[in-house]
Amino acid sequence: MFFFVYSPKIPIFARRNTNYRIKTMRKRLSFQYAIEAIVLLLVATCFILLARVAYHDRNLSKSLYADGGDEALALHSELCQLDKVIAGKQVFLQARQHVIDSLKGMIPALPVAQHMGVYRKIHLTYSDFQADSALRYVDKMIQLARKRTDSCMLNYAYSRRALTLAFMGDYEGAKRQLETVDVARLGEQEYTEYMHICRTIYGWEADYLNNIGLDNTESLRRTALYRDSILHIERDSLSRCIVLADKMIVENKIDSAESMLLPLQEHVSGTQLSYTLYNLAEVYRMRGQTDKQMQVLARTVINDLKNGVAEYTALPHLSHLLCKRGDILRAYSYLHCSMEDASNSNAMLRSVQINKIFPIIDQAYKNVTTRKDNREKALIGALATLVIIILVITLSLWREARKLRQTRSELADTNQQLAFSYQQLEDINRRLNDASRLKEDYIAIYLTRCRQYIDILDTFHRSLLKIAKTGHQEELLNRLKTDTTVADAQQQLCKDFDNAFLNIHPQFVERFNALLKPEAQLRPKKGEHMNTELRIFALMRLGVDDMGQIARILNYSMTTVYNYSSRVRNNSLYEKEEFRRRLKEL
Image 1 (cartoon, helix red, strand yellow):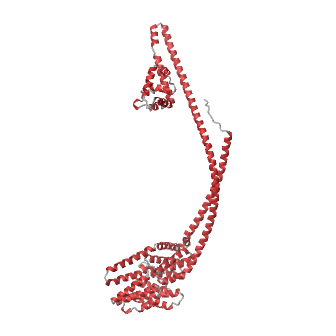
Image 2 (cartoon, one colour; image 1 turned 30 degrees about the horizontal axis):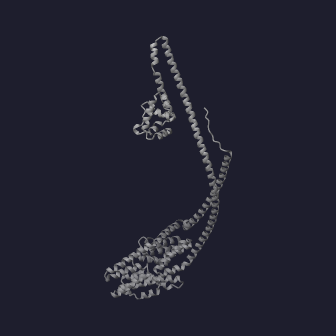
């Protein structure tokens, strides 16, 4: 079976124009993709450069310890812990200040007799925290001791004042203050502490003279003398072990000092732990084990900072060693922390120590920052060049994109026209196919039905001829009077009409009932597809508006057809003309 397909003609010049536009768009797309690839490559280069710089800065410190073995890695771990402690240093200082404020708040509620004990606690808390405040409260102790004529406490306060003066760098004033102490009136504990104070003052003086380049022989001699006195008067105490280890270090007995200090660090805390660790660091220094020395110094500083101590010597030494190792940024950070605490605590000796090594670390820091600045300038220059290139490429890309958008717009219009033509073509072909199929179906039905009617007429004719031959005129007359054959043919006609119409309009019954009131909607009987009323309006839907013609097709009188149609129209939801219009649209 052949179908005739309608194909709208597209002008040749239109097809050529479309092909040209497609080729042009493909060239521009290729150019755009190439430009985008170049831009992405340049952007990736920028990110790689930035990432390398950031990685270098972030991992510079770690790389200094990566190849030094287990000791170097342990040192790096301790330094990282120290970094965290320094970052949170203010928390520990505030905690110590809170303790002092609590002690000060107790004074108004206590009797004068108990003020001495509170003053002493406040002075001791301030002693390695803020020298000015420590001096103020030791002066209060002296005034109160004089009022109470308490010679033992007065001499103790004199010795503490001498230590505070030495802390502030007034070593001559400290020694004169020591001369005011009546040693004979000191108790055993106060006397032991007095000897420790004398050793500390002369030891600080020796360090100070050494830092400024003066002879410190006498100070070292006096330090050793007081050290021996402490060892003589103290028995089996932790402080004695610390002093003895110090003596061993001075005498270069580093193995014995180490064997004493290693277990000792597990039994001491606070200031004694810092002394122990610092002496242990001196052992490793004398052995040349720099990584271990730095590791122990880091632990010393951590202990001092956690206890709110602002006067320490370990951190400046650690900064100097880090500078020698090449960890300049960390060394500078640690030295800055040391300077800040030394300034706040008014620790003269620590300020001198810091000032001695500050130029070295500061110059190294300036060299590092200069190299970093030069590297950043070079990076910025490279990035600026890349940005300019990207801007130029982006401008070119924008121009091409604008042309590409115009071409795409033109192609979109052309495609829309082609799509519309194609849709029309599909609709026409579909209708033609449907019409061809229906014509085939109904030609077959028509031929079959005609053949059936011919067979019925032939059978009827033969039966009448047979009756006529027998001579039974009465039977022949009765047979002619009966209309069974016509009624059967009419019923078959209605059935065929129902099947054919509903095949074309399968939703007719439902849509037609939608035009009627709910109570007047038409429902065919069981086994039927449509009833008489539906057939009447089905014929009207097909364009048969003549009531006489409808009556002849359905074998009804015109009155019957008119009554049926009028009754249905009266139950419609719409006016007559609107009802007729909607019926035609079903």
